[in-house]
Length: 132
Length: 89
Image 1 (spheres, chains in turn cyan, yellow):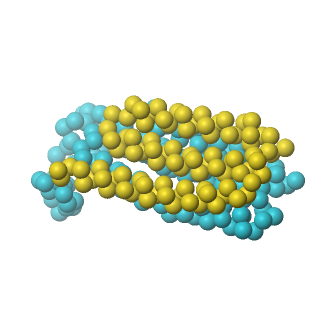
Image 2 (cartoon, each protein chain N blue to C red):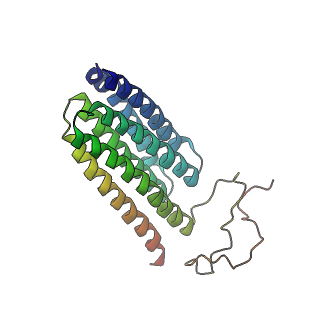
Image 3 (cartoon, rainbow over the protein chains, first blue to last red):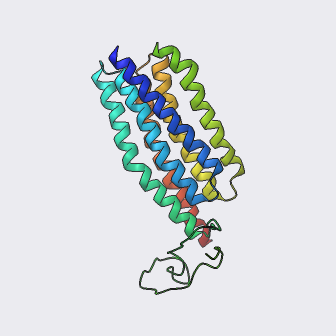
């Protein structure tokens, strides 16, 4: 009984976060902000849902440990894949939102754009962003 | 209690989230936008499978969620690598 109530609470919390992440992916103005919404919020939401599944199947140790294993795996892999997509997007020149304040990577790629070089000293701003 | 709640409330909410993120997959102005939307949809697929396992009391479906988690990570990495390399040609 207590496991069911706990499971319901986890499911409700996870559903809220998942809906927030889906709305954020549609409404955010920029791929980098969209990635922030999708990665963080959906990982939290799916983690809550799987915690609910773990609480519901608590009597079965195999299923319980598998649900916990999925949570650990998601926490390990979501930042890695978000980093890969963000790097690829910046590399292929997907523009930032016009109202972004900082673009610290601007000018830090060498002219071919292949390698990131922090020793390239660049004080110029990204001209596509608004002035503040 | 939880079977009915999962089947009639939580599962439709998950499907609604998948449909909303599908809008970004269709509209996304650039290829990485679509990759982000696809990544979110596969992540939501794991949640749908977990809720389905609870709704119909079939714990065996959690195994499928493990496999989907592994495959979706590999797929996202492959898409990102493809986007990264596509500029060279």
